[in-house]
Length: 380
Image 1 (cartoon, rainbow, N blue to C red):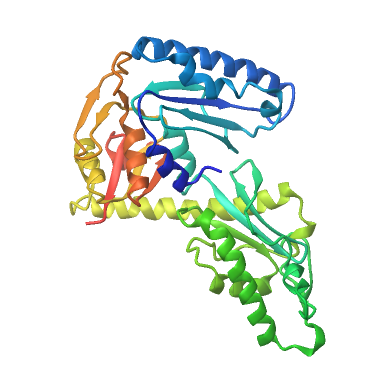
Image 2: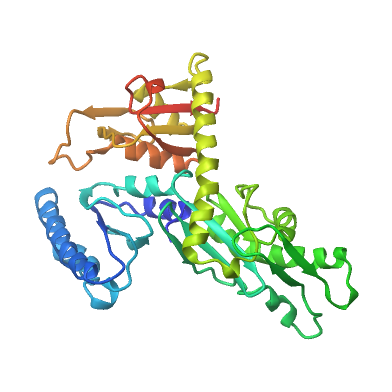
């Protein structure tokens, strides 16, 4: 899956020429067959761009890993979007649960703006379903909810008690769909404290399995479980972005669509509050000099690691170059096709902000930015 850590790795592999290919995809036929044809057309576009910008490079050799994806099996196992990256040092592809623009970019760096938009904390979320027969992590968007395979994640709560000499575990019954009325029974006369201790140990084991996936994330996590588990899991987990309200009840009885709808209601309300508070912070900080809507100033602050939150308007693009070391920018009125260093400055600044531990938010056009494509809140 695409994570901030994957983005960090990807940025570290940027030896030009860098080919970035994005394609919206389908999960079923006949869309998958059309995707394969459109993919071949994009590869041909990439070849043409490489021949024009890098005439001395062996284009066939560079694109060979991408062309190797033209298999029936590969195109029968897609989600809603596909991102492919290829350079002299690296090749990687990511299936995404969101649609992406159909585009090919050949430059000195990878084009990561669609990924940055996806990784923003107000674009996706996680759901952790905890029940006796299932422990499963999901990754969601407003329209999709997909399972995430996590190495060493136990599949059910009963698994803990399958060890030799272990005692029977909790028997849990709850209403479907978040009724919040859960009935807890303890076996063999154990008290609540014994049960909580065992659950705490088990939830810490779950947290250890999830940590490699979540440690660099800022996306909200919705807990789907009976209410008895909530405070115990919150105390056991290191992830700081678990929502205070979750999906209560026996989640085994919930369909994926119902779970997604319930999760998105919670996440949408949370994100609306986050965005409103962020704009309020920006409005208060701007007169005091702790925020800015001036592109050159923001770029220098991003390079210095001073930006805590970067706001950018949806759909805005600024072509040119930004020096990642100094933040110096050169802006072009339009994309320079023959300039191998020409790229979307907003894309680069979003990427730099994420890599330096800041947060990135895509917002609707807002008068607080005074017609600037960017706004930044500083750490200091």
